[in-house]
Image (cartoon, rainbow, N blue to C red; front, side, top):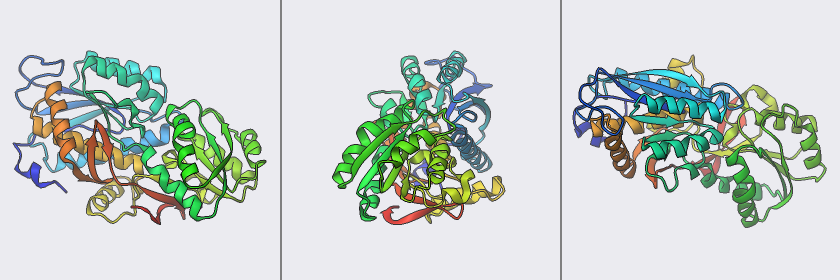
Length: 394
């Protein structure tokens, strides 16, 4: 296990938490009175029970399931190595079904149960509903959506996945270098992050790279047949089509482009990870900017990949699993430093650990204004693997 020097010297270890989506932490067998709705400040309890709220079904299901797997890897590693000393963690998983109302209901249940900390969902529309409630309730919430906006200007809300916005420049530079001139965008208009990318993130980057956006078409996440939207885009004869979609919505669009015999470049966003896998060779050649590749050779990434493959029958993890794994370790470090399940103590420890940074599966991770920062790279789906594109990040 890779543990930085600071935490080798810190106070006796105790408890942990898992991530991947929303997760509420409650103390079991903990003495003392409640403080800020989170339990005792007299050390960590022997058992910390966790409620993990994730999108394991619905159109965000592939991402949520990968995140849940990343949580399980971190849980096993932290408990088996006694990183938190005598304390152990148990997780009860809850599913939002990719529905904001269900996410809020589950978060409310966690708050009413006097949870000490919550790890919020991965789907931006769910996080958008959860974040204000967490902030009002003054409960630390770490979420896994790749949009950092929900943590901006808050005290208790944390974006544990580095914002995807900061990686799109690798994509526009790659298209420029491949001599693409005219580009079309297909995006999900019913997901806040993809809408933002299509409206205010991608266009200025395209202009900077000398790319012309010749078409921009919206496709809802519920669409299983994207042929109508694709036909409008292909009619503009673009050199490349950029798909800014969430979860399985990517599959429908990429498949429609293949069936339309589109011969240009297909680019995507972080939402491609996991979702495109079932397409096999029909997805080969699609590339996108992200924060992780399971072929990266850093000690931390190799350690995570090895543990993941051991637990999941040699399956390779994607960026969602890696971010969830690092999120668990971020919280575990904070809990160890706080030595408390008090909400304010945990939030203060998150500030300290985030500012100091640590090495994780995503690389060197720090937090700026409650938003995770980590190196990014460009990857291509090829031979059933996410292969780094040399010269573009990493």
